[in-house]
Image (cartoon, rainbow, N blue to C red; front, side, top):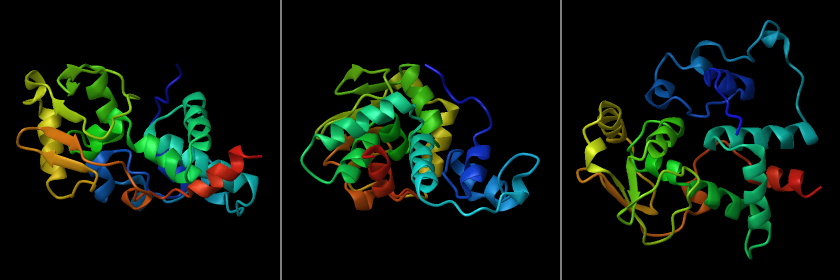
Length: 209
């Protein structure tokens, strides 16, 4: 599967808003938005046209995909599943994205970014319910317990993430024990738990055409 491998700070500059793709760097003066808040490229400063209609809907979808590092086919599948489930489609879409294992690892404070969390999961350093899981898109359920495997508990990146997370509270749907490097899913994510610059209704309108 194709995967974006360029500088992720360019994505934030393209959208003109912080997507928090670089962990602690996003909270410092080194953040690209703080230094160069205009679109990347030779003519980035000249792109002043206001985005409306389809372009605005597309931009919202792109932001969500970039935040969660999801490709188009998988993102479309999340929408299709949400649209066939009883409830608010936009909320259900975000709920699925939040329940991804790589996002849970990030939300629990075991990684400084979702991209880093994806790598940690891929390398087999995470267990769910006592079983090793190396699939970032694995969807956790209420009652699942996500833990960092003992062999990885002393990794520098995980310890750094723990220190960084100490200044930021976790979501209400996760019960996190950072000393034991364990997180229990005590509920399903609600819309108010997703504090991200995404208008999910515009995404629903885009896919509903």
